Length: 171
Image 1 (spheres, rainbow, N blue to C red):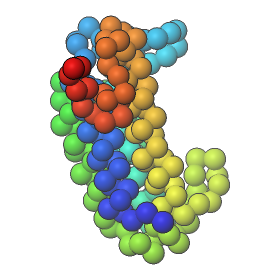
Image 2 (cartoon, rainbow, N blue to C red):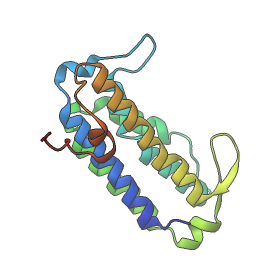
Image 3 (cartoon, one colour):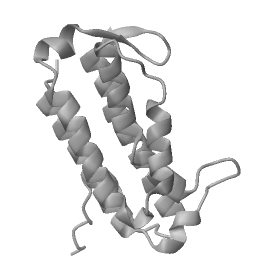
Image 4 (tube, rainbow, N blue to C red):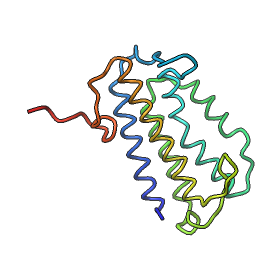
């Protein structure tokens, strides 16, 4: 079983990579969409600013027996109002909020408290956190990488996507 600190380290790494990819973009790439009825890059970035915190708050509300209504809508509205240039700062703020929530749980909470997933399946809080808060960042990071490559930066590679760094110079 992973600890809160291990989960947070992985979340922090995902956010670092996402910020790196954002820094590689040009303003023209914000309007790119790979197909009809698919998000634009800007819409994907906005979604990334709240995907983890909204789910972490939803989990916390379940743990404490609180109402979960409106959690996602609140974050959606904030993302729409955000200046896209503040994306890196908003991602850092999301990490801090998720860290506050995760740090409020004990190892016993993560291993033994049960919550329901979106599908209604009951799992431990730790499993739910890894399968959603962390995994969604990883999944949408990959989508962002592909959008950036498709919209004019084919030189990006594995280093950019998985490590959040530029590749070493070729010798």
